[in-house]
Image (cartoon, rainbow, N blue to C red; front, side, top):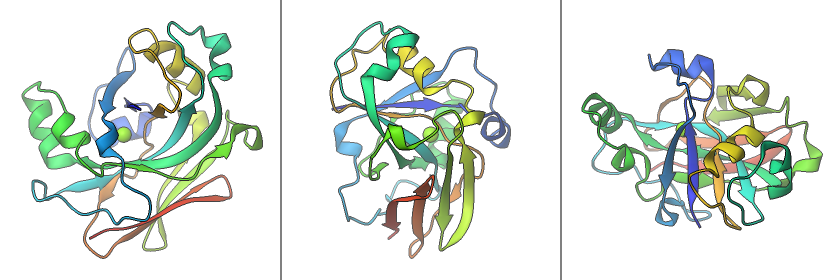
Length: 202
Ligand code: MG
C-alpha cells in the first residue's frame, strides 16, 4: 500500500507558507511505514523542533487503475476519510531551500494519520466541511469546494505516473491554519458531522 499526497491544493494555505501557486498538482509519497498505528500516540521525532499538523481529506482506492479518465475516477473509490499529514516544517524548509526532495520531512514513521473511513455516498464531495481541533479548539476549518484540484482530477492526474492499487490512500491537501504541536496536545478531526480520529502527542 502506498500513500500519495497532494501539496498546495488550497489557495489560502499556499499563501500562509508563501509558496508559489503550482501549474500542476504537487505530489509526494509516504511509504506504508509512515502510517501511525491505530490508537498509538504521535511521538515527536528527535530531528525536528517544528512538527506541524496538516488535516486532509483522504480517499481510499478500491480498484487497480492506470491512466484513469477523470469521468471514470468515481469508480475507483467508495470511501473517504480524514487524516493528518504530519510535517517537520523546519526540515522541509531547509530541503525546499536547497531544491532537495521532502521525504525526510514528510514521510517519516508516524507521519500519516489515517482516521476512520465512511461511504462517500453520505457526503456532498463538492462541498464538504472538515475540521481539526487542537485541545478542543478549532485550528483548521476546511471545505472541499476550495480545492484547486478536485478528487476526480487528482485521481486522473496521479494515475498518469503511478498505478493506483486497492488500499492505496490519497491525501488531498490541507487548508490554511497549519501549526505546531507539542507534547500533551490532543488533536481530533471531524469529517462533516463525523468523528474521524483522536491523537495524543507525546
Ligand atoms: Mg499536506
